[in-house]
Length: 306
Image 1 (cartoon, rainbow, N blue to C red):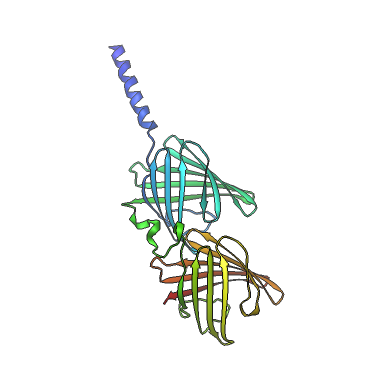
Image 2: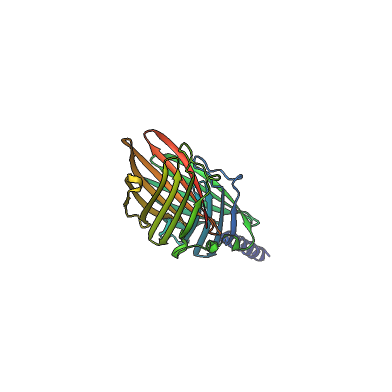
């Protein structure tokens, strides 16, 4: 009798241990609940959806992130066996190892932010009903430490965030900006600069080469100029209106980021412009941030395809 009781206890204990050892599966379509999340000192996105394919130890995550800088389509691949993998998030390389801690998945990542080394420990946990994914991240850098909690809620299917939703794309999901684009002056915001009366850009984009022919009417008269850049990060020099501009262009997900330097009245001016193409390929938004000794300001130009 005693022996039978001991066998029963051991069997129940082994069964309980096997349940505790079960690892959750994170597959699914996950929508970030921005209002329930806490982003600490970092800016919050306006929206994010992740599609996760998890066949342990392989985990693939396809993300669409919307923020003040526009929309990004990102893909990351991991393995949960502790092997280091490298993923590109826009121009940023992130090296990560992923391991199980009980029923939680722990991502340890490292990256460079400028000249600073940043490490991130991100712990994923799944609710008991499998409908809520919580990601608790701890950031460590020379500038200090910060915490962040992101709450994702499970949805049905994955078509809503398919990275191929944008029709006008080049290889690798990068936007193609070719076409005739007319500036919508009324919808645009020029900040402290005077708006033109009208502007039309004709873009010939055969990645990595891009040529932009501009015709602009303003209080200063009519201007016609052409600029050429490449999207591979090589510096290009152009002289629209007699002003020398030095630019580099690189991809940030599906968006093009153009960094330009120029001189204005002996002042160095830096401009970062992010080009964003709408999902239907009919609207191009250029968000620019200007920095100089005179101060900083932003500008948004909305172009419509003709």
